[in-house]
Image (tube, one colour):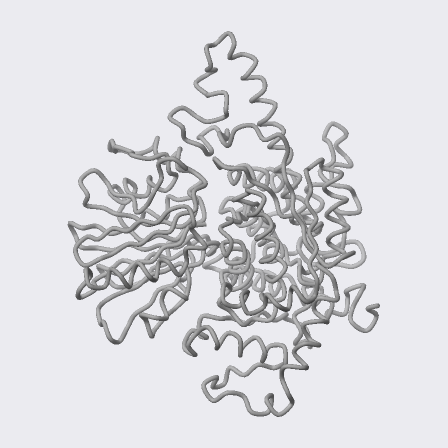
Amino acid sequence: MCGIFACYRHPNVQQFKPTALKMGKAIRHRGPDWSGNWIANDTILVHERLSIVGVDTGAQPLVNDEKTVSLAVNGEIYNHRILRKGLKNPYNFKTHSDCEVIIPLYLEHGVDAPKKLDGMFSWVLHDKTQDRVIAARDPIGVTTFYMGRSSSTPGAVFFASELKCLHPVCDDIISFPPGHVYDSNTDKLTRYYDPKWLVEPSNIPTKPVDYKELRSALETAVRKRLMAEVPYGVLLSGGLDSSLVASIAQRETQRLNDAARKRAAETKEKNGKLNGYAIDGHAPGGLVGIDDTNELATVQMLPELNSFSIGLPGSPDGVAAQEVADFLGTRHHTFTFTLEEGLDALSDVIFHLETFDVTTIRASTPMFLLARKIKAMGVKMVLSGEGSDEIFGGYLYFHNAPDKAALHAETIRRIENLHLADCLRANKSTSAWGVEARVPFLDKQFLNVAMTLDPEEKLIKRPERIEKYILRKAFDTTDEPETAAYLPDKILWRQKEQFSDGVGYGWIDALKDEAEKKVTDEMMKNPKEEWGSDVPDSKEAYWYRTMFDEHFPAYCASTVMRWTPTWSNQTDPSGRAIAVHEQKYENAA
């Protein structure tokens, strides 16, 4: 996960360059592998690189031969090989980077270029000839991205992967909306991602579930995200979503390894090549990724897939994750943290997450600690299970959905806000340590399958239908004797645990206890004046807000959204606070 900073139309860009480099350095944790910058006209692009694809040649900013178009990208373009083949005009590619294809796409399609991309991305492109900037963010906002302006430099527009790059030079900052593109020719943001289910939320889908279609779509989404030239792994909490991703990734890794072994055996007669593919799994020309036959070229043979989990000793997720890993045969790494270690990390977590939302901080702290362990093991990319609960109505409060129309509207609302919640958590918790998280459930094609189903199928009807029933059923192979089981039944049908609960119920209790010590009743009655009407409703929330204020100016708070359950009288966002949870607070040991 790289980091980018850009400024368009600065009145003195050469004089501003040292500041721009300093702002880029502020997010070097996102891209520790290399730094680059490019100036054209009055625009500067700064890039901090984490190399996963095109490792040897993909340094950024990327520039065309004529030096008229420059580009800084954070993210991955999974269909780059297909896009290269589909270009109408020849283009001299100088790298193996999946991101370089954006330049010729812009030259052919202009502001419509983002519509062609399948991936997670935020990027800024500058056209020197037109003195034009195009900036875009992926459909759901998997990669973090902000846009700012400054009253001291009117006319300039700033872009960055994180808030900490912008607040020293901007006094007006927004979270760049997902699925939108900015064009300096109009100085406007325009939606380019506009599937019917998203832009017409009152149009309730009626399509029945095709379980095999749903399964195949998720398998394809995982396969795309194994595009890499470095060792990768999977985050495995032991819950349904991460376990399914891990199961599919393990099957695909084993399939790729078997194919590589077969090719290796045949190379003795074929002089190192077979059907145009090198024995290490790379496609011709050194390009990794999915091709137009849905075949994947990726990292050389992996002896085994690494999986990672974290929790307090004896946590629900830790026990379940080990069981899944044993079933799948992954090389599993279980890490634990103490309550003190978690509490000590909170200020750093809030600095990196750039939020004061209670749910996000509760869940991000274990993920933040885990990412550091993963980086220490030499793994730079992991798959994660974010997005499933929003798509399928998997949170426990969805038990209270009154009807399918209300459920459908709530799933859309949750998906639209993922960039301020779970995507933000996954992206920033891992990128804090130079690790990239990829999220198959938020694949465009998978969303088109899952969000066009009749939401009646997603309603939770106890006892016969628990949360995410149709997803579980899609991977239940009981009636398919020819298909190996994806997961043990007890995992496939395990009750939902929100991540901050699953790492150990003592974690949330410890946070609440510590907040009681830090925040007095008197403080709660007298919130800070600069908070305005945005007043924390609990001591834990108050505590997090004060730590946020230590790192960021008050106006940055407008980029934060609080995660709260719908159809519930509970203000506590923990799944354990919802009445249907088997370990709800009043019964917790």
